[in-house]
Image 1: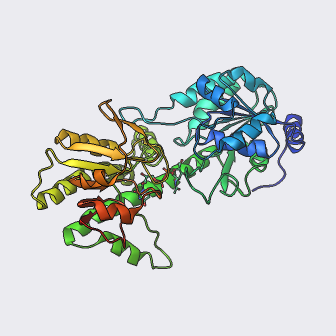
Image 2 (image 1 turned 120 degrees about the vertical axis):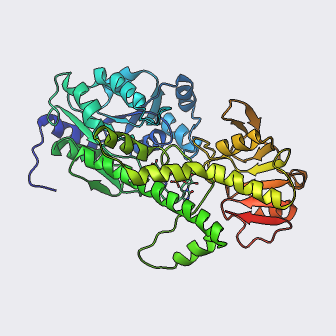
Image 3 (image 1 turned 135 degrees about the vertical axis):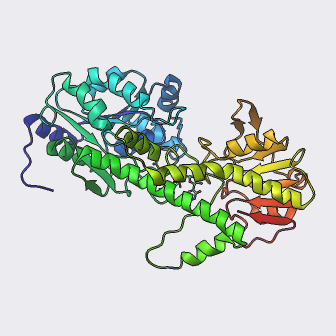
Length: 444
Ligand code: SAJ
């Protein structure tokens, strides 16, 4: 990246402790990012202290009970038994750590502005524990400038010289929940430091658990890289959702069109239409950039257009379902609708931002009788606060439904069996491709 980098005595001491596996790592936020990262460091022989505000979660973790689908309890229990992982709600434990990695959520407020309250709380909790020789890393997805605006002043206010006695870095998480192929170790990791020495220390830290590091020139470049990755997905999903509506209007099968386009060996990457855009990343992260650029008097038109199109998909799905019932002379009012899958994507149990929630709200607003099944979601809290329990997936449930809406194409579903018993199927995921069906199948 550049010539000789000056490493202060404290930086050199950090590197020595790390290579001797004597360094201790603190991870703030033990969710779907922090806990797998903690396990990766524990497996690398590093002693990890996890900090989380949820004391009940800390107790479960210390008892070897995983709270994250991608972390088996067996691996957690082993790390705890070996003394390589412990969890606490007390930030003071970080005073014993040589590095602290912040992996807290970055949601949106009700007005779709960034809610960095979790980053602020982590920074406030960590700052008093920061000591000479410590590396502080932010992993949370956020707008360019956050690390420098939020973390840097809280460190310099303690009198530290960043890059000499305390070190500051940013490295965006790239966890894809439920992904069986890519994990922390084999997913290249972008790393940036406030100074070159900060980056060297962060690269040494992550080098213990990640095969390939991607150093970039600044904290903001790394923050922007992550936003670009997720904006790329949101905008392309918005594009293909609009294409689905266009194909329907033209009487074309959008799934066939995408499959054909995907045969192009260069210059094309398939995305697929769906009931909307769920999860706690893709629908949200791009709007962090929208907010930031708005403060600078600039628009982010692609992001905002994609947000509108993706946000309209639940209502488009309900409208199409209403049309399908209408074709059979059944009003939506009083119709029994069984929804298969409510999680935001297949093979996970997460319902955050799931399109199923606005779909259920819209169906109930039209007085349909809605029930759902999801092998990962036994109970669902609806937008109006009411709780709905999943129904057993039986022949009676399928045959008793006026329409079955496929919202999430979990691998666990036996689609030929479902299709053999449902009278009307609305498939938002092309789950029934090539599956013979007893009744009428309508697709996005
Ligand atoms: N979706 C579509 N059509 C597609 C792809 C996805 O409608 O072609 C929908 C999904 O059903 C889901 C939403 O978009 O509702 C988000 O899906 P996702 O596959 O992006 O899954 P996330 O949000 O769990 O994880 C993503 C990561 N996924 C992939 O790269 C495949 C990655 O973008 C980030 O590492 C992660 O968000 C994050 O934490 O930022």
